[in-house]
Length: 178
Image 1 (cartoon, rainbow, N blue to C red):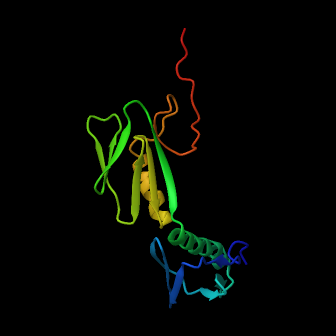
Image 2: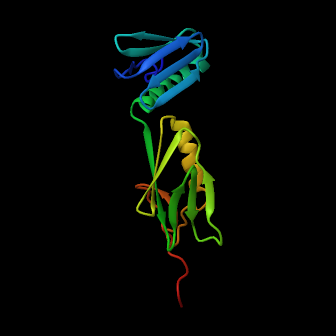
Image 3: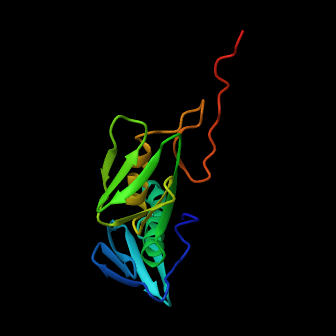
């Protein structure tokens, strides 16, 4: 049995869980998330906790036990608190703004970069160089943040680019003079 998989998932009071056959639906104040759970798992709800139990103890099923428990825990945290990623723009003239459902980035190109914001994601620009991205689905949040970052990944010589908050860049020395 997986050490992580056997831990119970604590449910806040504002979260409602529905389990129909293999479809797990979790509702909270920030949204609703659904996940298809394989038939080898049984999700039991009791006393404000969820327990993910494994039906068949094979090697591959044991490997998935901790994964599905963590996915369910992330769903519960997402609908009750939301996840947050912060991106920092570092470079001369780099700035961001939100116009409707579009994130507009000025990253030193000859044109601004327009990125459509998905429905389930909230984007807020603080100052002009800090982007706060919030969502209840951790997977979609990470994917959108990676798409924004892919326009200007941080480079090791001057440290310019789009960085995650508190990210450390290994700096290189560059050319040495004569």
